[in-house]
Length: 454
Image 1 (cartoon, rainbow, N blue to C red):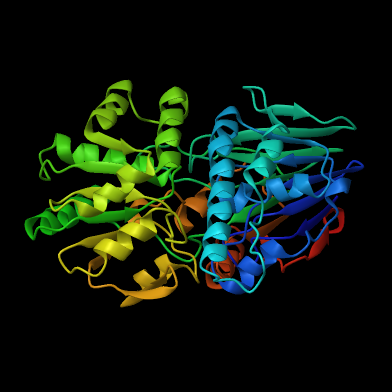
Image 2: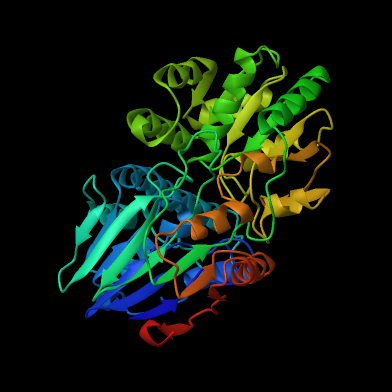
């Protein structure tokens, strides 16, 4: 068995891992790089492997840093199937098409304003590319098991994190490798805890929060404090949030606060067509999360769902306090840019960062105290109060990750630590070796391992 890491090394984005086993070439995840320009430029380079030689793709979950390069894979010759859970398939349908639409819009904007080094500017991929990709999706059975032939057995087990997220076990010839995917938290507000007890000889684990613990605070109470003080000074609250996972956590938190009478009865607006669609998918897959039918219904009654562009623009003219939730979660694009450009210069308002902000993103700049952000070709002053609530993160922290590893049904011979900034990944590697006495390695970009000799 050979494993090659083509992404999520030294960064939390761009997950792509090639597994060669039983005469098959399997790609686990195929995500976009995000953050620093040097990483984003990798998205435009030729794929570092021949897509025509890939037999199948196994997708852990729908987030774009894990799924966003799938249309490129298809466009460059991949002919196989893309396997995932049913909920992940529904989420990919909206996420991939929306990502393609945003890329087309950005290309049109750059051409219109001549803000491009290339004539003409082109999108990374088109909506048509995304639609072709969706035709290759195969939903796995409810038991999570998949037989690819040649004694290659696949098993998907729940990973928490977001709806449909899974860890993926690949077994052949009595040996197995387990990919954690992005692992959720035991105490997540919305999602059930990750499944434990899988048996594997090798494990590939994420490390987004590998060097820290989530703060021992009540994230809902902290959000309530921000809303109350912002509303008291006549300001609005802008919450950048990923359409899948974070948006639903924020909506549930606001619902809890309103139910308890802990915040004023100000409007709550979800300004994200993709977030609106994703919330509907959460409603249809209630077996995959903790929320009751009554809570789902209550969230819908509380929230104004905005889909049309003209309704989004109209929010900028409102003079009363409101909560606006919009993508993207790291302020890399989407409607939230317009809201921050409008509300950010006014000190009455607040911007609430509700999760991890990758290096090189506008969200990371805000978290670091930036007093201006470059948006739409110019620098916008930021005078609004900027707050970060890490307690709403859907990622497990260092304790959660070590606990998940320690609860496996078999002690692996080696762990590969990926999907983390360098310090987070190396800190988790050290903790795994010291606390669990398991050989651990942080792989380099494009590094290959022959596992039967590891």
